[in-house]
Image 1 (cartoon, one colour):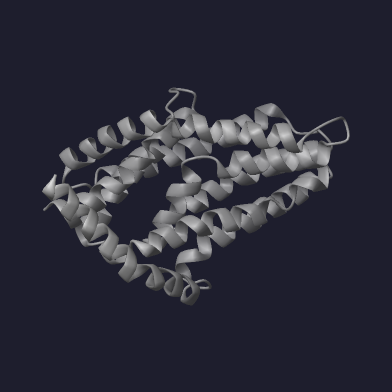
Image 2 (tube, rainbow, N blue to C red):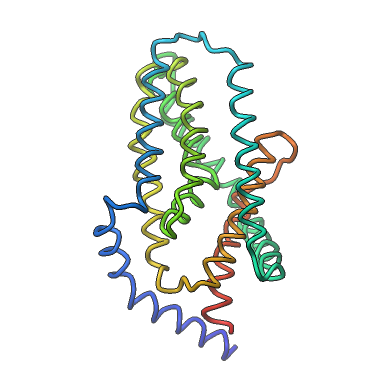
Length: 259
């Protein structure tokens, strides 16, 4: 109990000392290298939707399936490459187990899906709602998922690779939705930008805790999640990847508050 209270005190002290730093640092770097992945993701999604507007349902399902399969293979390679960089596989495994237990208990993925269905139900009504339905559905597809959270976190750590992969995936879905639903889906880039920026700010807030060990092991945990996403895309598994997300905090807690 005493140890738990000490950890809570350390966390509260850290929050008080570094919240202002996180906001200022994000503003100062908003046009810099680390946010370029978020900008690319937002712009390419809207441009792809715009390109798809004029096609009017003339997209081959075989074409989109093939492209998404290639992207999934690239994500698999990226996930494996990052995961093997770990120097503390026991911590990575423990992080995944603990994080998954927490995420499953909370029901993160189920709640995210319920939220998406709630928005679609209340914003998409009647036969004249095609404009809104396309926008809401695509926004949910591109923001409710692990990549939209892990990507900005890795961007804050200096790597935009995952956001570039996500941009490719989102471009395909935006292109298809542009053809199916018309001009209403084009503003999806605005939603993406603000959503991912929130997680970028949070990652910046935790930046003073990001020692070399933390970054390495956090990246390994994140890359395992990327591999899980790729396996889901290839329809080999049905992981609830969003339930893994609490695992990202375990290396931070371990290296800064437990040892």
